[in-house]
Length: 225
Image (cartoon, rainbow, N blue to C red; front, side, top):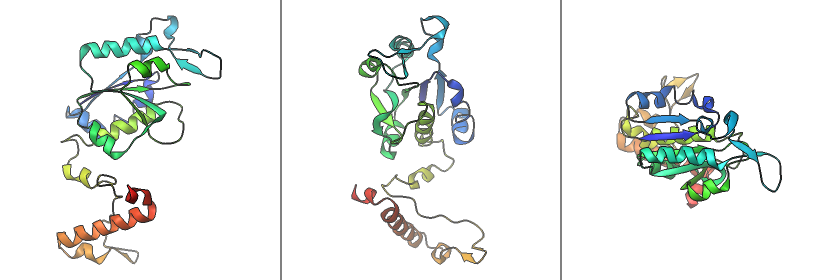
């Protein structure tokens, strides 16, 4: 999978993709992430990419031309399955969205900044708009990193144990059950005895019941869905 991220502050994305699972995914050539700065291709002097909004109002808006030039340059080199814009008013990012995107081959992610991007880019280039929650960040970079991480770890071969992703929270519409490791008794706090029974079927049933219980207590809306 190839993901191209468009951002005016590429430095914000240096760390998220340089460590842990995302680093290994790129080292294995299973995921390729490229970061592009529209300042490098803008036709305006001094790398200008934003301007005041028509009609007045606080905040600068990212201009359409620098973005359009960069998007069209990328699209001339390969076909993209999605052009995603990270925005607070987009569709809420969910596990099912991550699953669907993990099956794609090439994706562009546009990170908004300042007051956002010119609506004409959204109208004519963007195919999907995503929000990671009902709050506002300084830009779309951290949100883009969240999406790339959630999607990238689902690519076959990225995780050492491919089955581990299948048991993550939300994969089956439920929260994950509690997990325990050694020692079996810590400060007089023992682990559930069933985890020591050696019967995988009984343990799986217990985990499912715990998932149902935790979901009902903490996220009852998921049960309704």
